[in-house]
Image 1 (cartoon, rainbow, N blue to C red):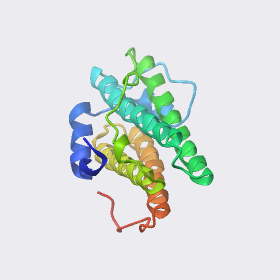
Image 2: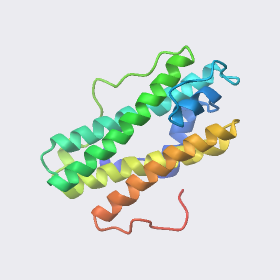
Image 3: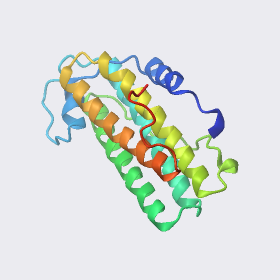
Image 4: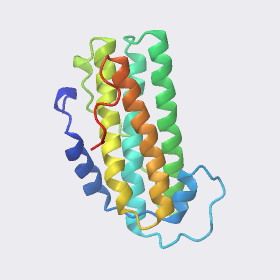
Length: 189
């Protein structure tokens, strides 16, 4: 799938939710909230929790790879490259916490794919790279937005909303960088 054929936000959310099955555990909340020491109990964790976490982890690993592609493209000016690497760092933090949660729940964390189907041949300018990154962030916002109300644990919903907020900020900054309105509407879908 090329950059210009990326799924619409609603389709991306359905894809994410369809792959995950959704409902995470209190253990995931602890990790997603940045707490290193996890509670011994799993607050009703199920096999679905591991599947959902791994789906989110897979998306974070893809984002890390996408930002690496942008960084290595030599199309980004220094300040933009620094910003891209900062955003990549955020995705690395998300991935690390998700992987730890999967392991704590007894699952095997997802690993990066050997390669991703990124639109490399269509990335010819800094603006192309930023549009590509903005689309990925938009998809992440949509996916997390769809997930938040499905959590059984309100603390977990807060943790997912925290990641959602980070992804939304990335999307807004990237839109601003390519000359688009950073917040295109009063509601996110």
